[in-house]
Picture: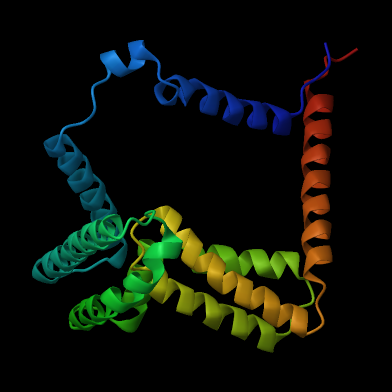
Length: 241
């Protein structure tokens, strides 16, 4: 039997995970009857657990030696998450009244107008207990480290970036982070970052970079690297003659 590529296995596994969840979304009476929807209390408990986990991780990374300061920072972050959740509920209720679909495109303008004062107050309060470097860490953790991940990706994809271009990319991604901190979900944060990545792509294209070719070449390199790894693994797995 032919050795199956690790990359194909990974894709197959992802597809199987998706297929495995399909019955819950296709009207299976057995699934619907056996798994009742979560109650409001259960939803709230899950949300509380999620934000407590995220916040605890941030506080640990900050390495705050003063327990009182650590408690204040913890409470500020938790309060911010809950404030944004309440804001989301208000925005979504308004969109429903207007008969609009609840998505980022329809939420964007309201997010911008309602989030800025909340955002500014949050950072002012955090700044009383944190250094600028620690504040950067909080921003990164609340946006899933998208600044660093995206910046590194641009440097890998466009290999001839100048220092000025790298600085522009980083500055633009940090602007994205400021806005994405207030996103109501991981999907919304990604949509906000995409808006700024479109700006970066336009900037690089105007500067003479062929972004379509850069992405294509990078994808080819990644595929070649995976193929090479698979071939090496296959040779290693062959029994000695």
